[in-house]
Length: 321
Image: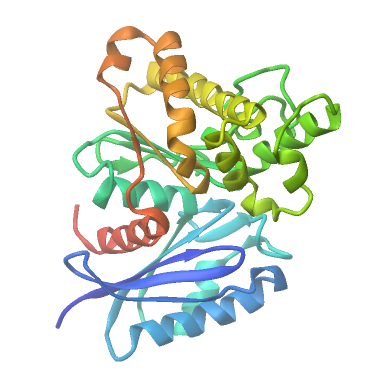
């Protein structure tokens, strides 16, 4: 009988997942509402229904789940999750196992780690053994692959690349620190930079007319369009994004000497507007030898990266070392 696993990516709005066979081939995909804003019990209810629907009559050997937040993967506990209402130190693995029954193995990880695993296994990094992933979305998540294995750190907090300090005198970050990478390279950072520039009142920019009427999640795309049209403010914002990324990449490469850095997430769609600045800054600040050997690539799996990473981790958990 074929072995199947399920890979799931939990978002604040949707649950996305896939049924995957033992050869790591996606058999079926599904997306439903997560209702994460309604609380953990509602999310567990939706997760249970999701698993039962996508598995059908197939025997499931393992389930991998990527969750945004601080995850204790060893214990299967959500320590904290910004997109799930009323959750702290919640034993999600046990709670889900109780509802599903049977002996299906459940693997829980931070969603950015799952994205990195997916890109390493089947995407931009499939031919390397050491890789750093930066997922640039609303915030900036990260993951580290060393010698073909996910590095989660001694306490499950490894890979928090978004909170590398790139400017000690920079703006307040959501984490409480000042000048984090996330406060320069993320969707909310772009909103901050546009807002501050417009408050100044002296900048002539097409963004002034569209800022108030643009959904916050769509603003990076508007800034990208404005930059492609030659808007000076928009171009300067992407230059700031690139500089911050370059500083972080140089620091990471000096420390870890990996083969590849992969950049993904919605903000990475503006690749051509920031990547040259990022590379220039990284090469200027990093040690010459490891920087010359470093490959910096855009992700290729898109929204499927987290699902593929979760499925791979579930399959890998079934295989002997």
